[in-house]
Image 1: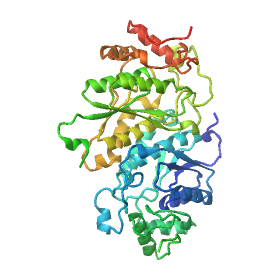
Image 2: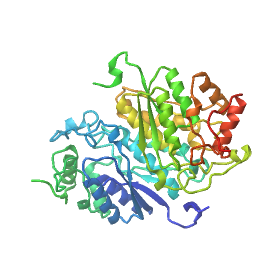
Image 3: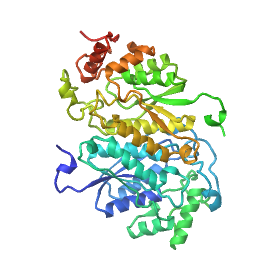
Image 4: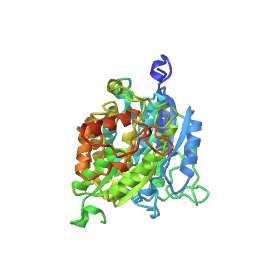
Length: 238
Length: 238
């Protein structure tokens, strides 16, 4: 047996889903705070811009991950989302508008697919803990960001894998930000030393990678920094 | 609204996971029998040989699928399985040996990943039914072939997607072969007109694509045909 659990005092390993955004950077910092040796996975799923993946690489390196893989996963074959298809990103929506229904930036079954791939990688690593930066407060529109989804995924994982079937592992999916506001996430990450200048949130950056300041993601981010009494270190287009 | 459910009397759509093997070919035939308009998805996950995917294409075409996509998913990054890494395929094992523990041909979280991607595609198609040819009888070693796994995946799916969150859909994962023996599957498919000569089961074919007759998959297949009183139409190496 060469799996991690048989190596006595080796540190527990965790796989962290790293998007390059503010939330997953904070989730990585929480995983380290809890003593995990961290492995990061990002997905190249046909994002319209590559700044997200560049940010993910920088965040992982700064966060001390042991290994970081970028997994190609071409969800463009599905169509149907502003993040992967050619649909205009909504701008300057009010909080009420943002809160109504499911955003058009929804990608079908995205977190299900990402967690499933992370689960497979984690099993080969002997890592029984997954960290995901989902949040049910600011983005209540995404069904796969809710606590009941995370719980159902965990229950499924514990029936799906060799490690759990053989009783060697009990999967845990950590969603440490799920009940925090954006301001609360930023306050937490700032205390843990996260450099938010490395992260990227904008759905519609300019060619130089500067954030637009007007899409839902920028507005939630700016509001979060404002409520936390902090200044967002990323650059915004004039 | 342009989704299928709003189109009145349009036929119900189903996504069928098609591997090119005997089981998924039969599951496709069951989906058609139940009246579904079928969409097939196969995965190019770094199989050691390509005969599986060629068989999947032939089976899909013969089975009348509306559309067939081959989704690239490079699980080789994970390692740890005879089907994707350079580990010898076991030969001429007894049924007792085959039945002990989880086969080394296990790929971590494979069915979880495949079903998750199929779920995403199905949501964009307005297809709320998934068909998977898993079987708990002959391959009890695979944890993600058990009924409790299929049920847990379905419960998770119903919390994961926009369609279910908005009450437009209730996901169903059909595993019509789950309680059948290999002989029972072959009898069912034969009644439904499946051409098993198009399928491929061998883990270790020769360069011409002929089956070895000695790996676990060939032995279960040959035993199934024998018990069904039928002759396997695929070609075996001498």
